Length: 98
Image 1 (tube, helix red, strand yellow):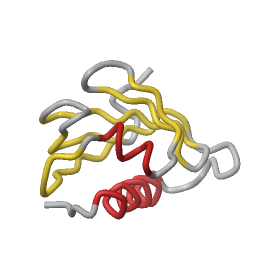
Image 2 (cartoon, one colour):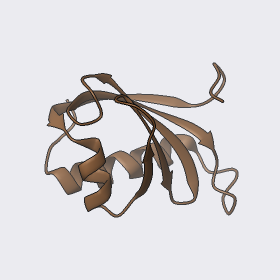
Image 3 (cartoon, helix red, strand yellow):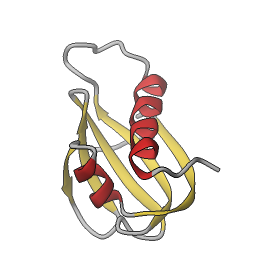
Image 4 (tube, helix red, strand yellow):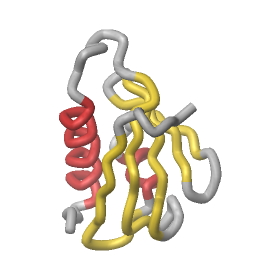
């Protein structure tokens, strides 16, 4: 489903976070795929969040890929979507980006 032309952003976090716990606490719909990948529905967009350092339960680095743009905003800039998503996760955890 993902490809080279699909938007992706890499983030490094100041400390390890449990992505599944954070998504639940932030009330963001998600489905864990395996120990590294989680499908997320955020503001009607479908994202794939991949723990690139650690696992989803203790991630230090993540890639966020846009799988499907929100149907109500098909022309929304992926960067603004990624930023809003990561900022919400960071606010929930109290950690920061590196």
